[in-house]
Image 1 (cartoon, protein in one colour):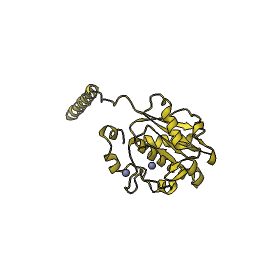
Image 2 (tube, protein in one colour):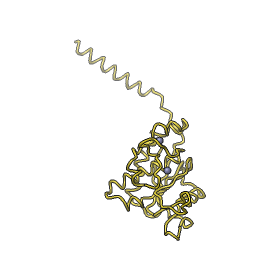
Image 3 (cartoon, helix red, strand yellow):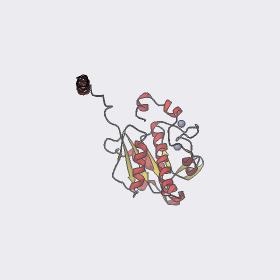
Image 4 (cartoon, helix red, strand yellow):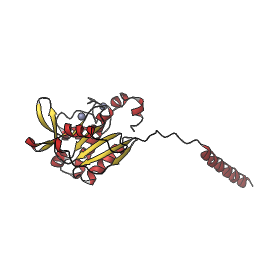
Amino acid sequence: MRTRRVVGLGLLFISMVLVGSFLAPAVAEPSPERVVAIVPLGEVRQEFLDKVQQELQSRMKVRIRIDPARELPQEAWYAPRSRWRADRILEWLDANPPPEGAWKVVAVTEAEISATKGNILDWGIAGLGIVGGPNCVVSAHIYKKHSKTQEALLRRLGDLAVHEFGHTLGFPHCEEKGCVMADAKGKAISSADASSGRYCAKCLGALPAEERALVK
Ligand SMILES: [Zn+2]
Ligand SMILES: [Zn+2]
């Protein structure tokens, strides 16, 4: 008898919980959904694109989408060094309509890229992002050349993507130990290996509330 009553109360409780969950108001979704488009430039291995997508998705509450590949823009070709100017790639992305619905663009390439650094006219770089800009570019070239294992290559590339994307979020370089926004100071490999892969509390604290809410 006593047992039966306990069971009866249990069922009543379960049915109340079920009714409660049906009546609960739907949680407001942030709208419209923000989308980051990963745009492969030239031929890019799928595993590189997947890694960039996975790393960005693990840090951001927005949708990270891989778009169809595009050709590298001819105007970015730097014949004297047979490589591509990253600054011109970003200008080209700026000048053309952004991919459908994209909030920001992360261009990924295996091609060698460069930019002007101080008084060095053409300096080989791993990636480039303008602080607060709409897009950034990352290249697997340096990591392909200098990584002994595929695992190291992918880890470094993922870290670089988080770094360059961080510039587009508005982060400048950061002095905090292990912060992914550390200045590589021309050393793409050792910088990626010293990074925790995370935006530090100081970086995140500088974001406006609306943007902060988009970072995990
Ligand atoms: Zn940087
Ligand atoms: Zn930081």
